[in-house]
Length: 186
Ligand code: SF4
Image (tube, rainbow, N blue to C red; front, side, top):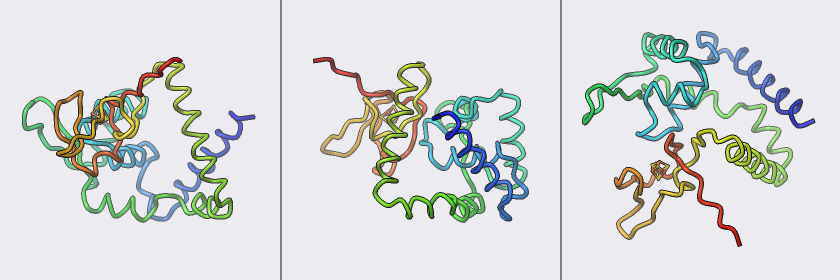
């Protein structure tokens, strides 16, 4: 059954992270926050966006972010336009830690053994995720380049929502404002 398979895979992942010698000092939620902040864009690296992405309470996420700051894995910077808003950035040690543990070896090895079928599976899982997001009206946190507001202009990429130019690398990051393209009916 699909649910059993997804549950088994996520518990294997939890165990792998829990037993990793480099991750003994990090709680799972702290690791999830770091992984999210590595993948998200400048509109999405706020405490509120981390809370939305992880689907946890504000208090729990706030405590975890403080713990990460104390460990020297995160820094907070004030928004240049809105002084009440802060952005969270990974420090070099945090980036080095993620580079060392991600993606999990067990998954890379299994995907290599599966060859092209692993790519097919990735496509199917993405389809499953998009289907759930459309059906349940939850935030997509999708890749910028797949957003309905992403425009490719002569001068480079542009966000039609924020009306700001985008750096080339930002196209590959996830965004809390991401919106799936409209489905056109024939
Ligand atoms: S184009 Fe979409 S995903 Fe990219 S920054 Fe704008 S709103 Fe976010």
